[in-house]
Length: 313
Image (spheres, rainbow, N blue to C red):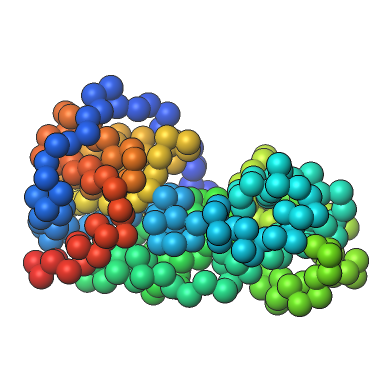
């Protein structure tokens, strides 16, 4: 008899669409906020990191401006600046062929996933938490946590990875490492196109392949994804009995239901938990959390550096 499959973690239990009704921008001076956040981290038994796009932007992996125009000038010239405004928007361009689609995405993956080293923000973040019991929940797909030294078994990357591909229609629950393929495409690309023989095809249904990014109902949640979801759930349960800090980095209101609102829900329901929210423009925190919340606005890279330099962490 076949061994019964292990029950999969219900991902929906982690989500929340309910914002706080008492957001405030704290008027505490920056240095006092850093000291308060530092003390919370020092006293914590467990730390749950929640990282959104703002974290990588603060680290220097920007999707617009000179970093975009300098690396994607041939795509801007070919498809038009009206459509190619930044790396995010460019990914939604209706590329006319598979050769064109992979011409863009192989370049995008090289620039944002494979070529960048571990950025200082992520390395400093690792120094802050490495002696603690910690876990990372992230919507980022650039592999920066792993590069900075965070073990894979302590990371749940909910939205995929720029280094992997999957069947476009999700016909089977498996993803594929595309690093070698993307490096070859990057060398072979001409006029924004990759050679036809390099276009990947699904080994099961023979159809087109796609980036492993959550953008539609076909996103593949493979065995490793479900294992990571289970580890995240177990970490949450253990935090209920410990003194914990939820360290939220760069999560705005565009997609708040995975990290921002769930983190607030956890703090509301458990007096042992505190929230440290770092965000350039949206560092509002619920007033009802009192001294269990610190909302630090402005330069996140500077805030992480200042937290890392505190001798009492």
